[in-house]
Image 1: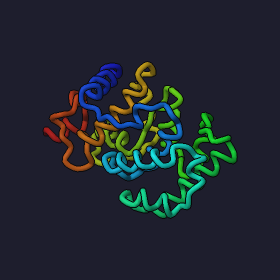
Image 2: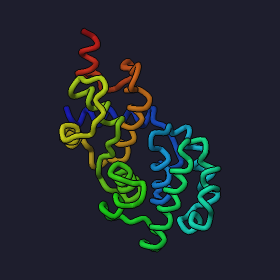
Image 3: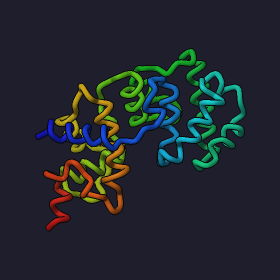
Length: 213
């Protein structure tokens, strides 16, 4: 059954998943920038800003050459532009001064970078460095919280969620599974008005069964 769940998520992603440039690169810095912009912001909002950022400042060395105000002007549509731009500057400075302009592969070093943390470090390790690890964000917590526990707004990434995901996680298709979970959470298993009729894993979903009763 666990294999069936992951296979259905991957199949759905292959047919319905979204295509974004940060998913088609293995450049860890570009992926890191995208993930930082995606925090509490939709991918469609991030897309044009991500492209402008890379056109102007494609490396940490480029980023540290400009004032944060110029960065803020570019990322203004995302909101919190002053906070975000200062964070980007601090990140670039750290990468250049401590890591020779490269993004470190080590888990703890990644987590400790300015503005990163556990989820973003997991995303970079999986998408850029091909580590077979889950990327568990609020979407994943909500999707699996509903599927396994029947709770409508379960979004916390706790040991219960991690244990369940570890049982179904396909190490040979880690990226496709992770991106499938993200897109299903964004497009199908939404916080409000989830479209269960479009979900490929309703067969044993506790939330779906409760909603039918």
